Image 1 (tube, helix red, strand yellow):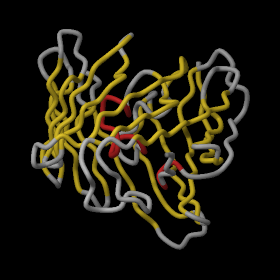
Image 2: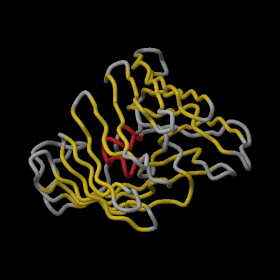
Image 3: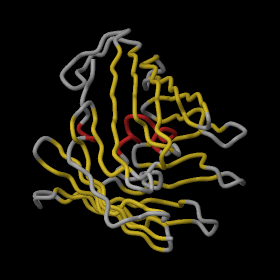
Image 4: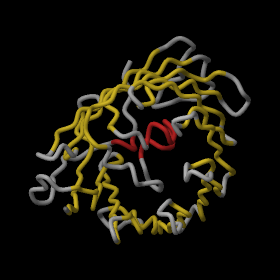
Amino acid sequence: MKKTLWIFLPLLALSVGACKTKKCKPAKLEYSIGDAIRVTDFAYKNGKLISSHISMKDGSKDFGYSHYAYREYGKLDKVSNTYLGTMKFEHNNTYQLTSIETKLGTIQFELDKKGRIVTESSPMGKRTYEYENDLPVKATIYDYNGNLYSVNEYVYDDKPNFMIQVYAGNPLQLLHGFAVAHAKNNVIKIVETYQQNLKYEVNGKKWKKGEVDTQEIVYQYSEDGYPISQKLNDSDTMRVEYVCGE
């Protein structure tokens, strides 16, 4: 059975200008919640994301800004959000991300010899990842009580992940973890197999142990291979505008 997640929902995407042979970053991301459109605007300096702002397109609500600060060696130091407070990023002596301190608790990462995240732990639970071609293709997820929750499998395209720099407001991050949200390529298929009977509804259904939920994401791309439109389970989902440079 397929489910539609609001964080991916609607709109068609266009690219700003021809970005051929140039590196591009998202300048604006639009997606809908029902009939409403949520807009995220991104700002950069010296090639790095320095701020993002989220609001409803009709002006009905402003969700505030996220500001990005970096260490002297170029890695992210902290993200300060109007409502969520500050996310503090810690790295090891080879500049690999090891933990993130948040208002809701600390997210800790266990890395393999290649520096890839193999375990992600937080007060919400734990995820363990398996890789193929340096992409996290399988995640085993445990809830906050340590009980097995689901086993997820991921399929990717071969195009650059346009949200790889975004740590505040990244749609995949909350549901599928940091390794998937910041993979080098874009997820095009998610197969989620539940390992317990849910006591609450997810998109109008209480899933049972053994049931499988499949989500298919289809992109259209610019000449440079950047996603300019997205469909989730056959529904138009997103509009992206890019800023491009050499």
